[in-house]
Image (cartoon, rainbow, N blue to C red):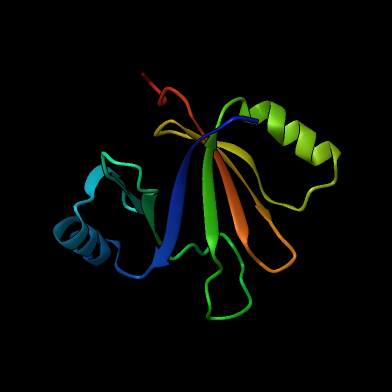
Length: 125
């Protein structure tokens, strides 16, 4: 696996409010905005920020949201098979989203969610 970027993911009730905060006060720019998430970046070495609307897909048992660490990687299908064969705790199976994202999630024993993403051509592109 070759990690090519890092992203900090925040699960929030108001992604637009956080987008305004990070853009206005910290110089981030919007890369992608969807109904469920907003991706922000800078031109320097800062980790990207993904502002995700509260995710009902992940059934967490408490009000506290877990920490999510996201890595953009190469050859995610191969990594998924390797991790599955190794018995890794996969909590979201490999999937492809129409905006050009292939992703999977694992969760560590302390509840830290690791999201592995590979950017692919969007559907219809």
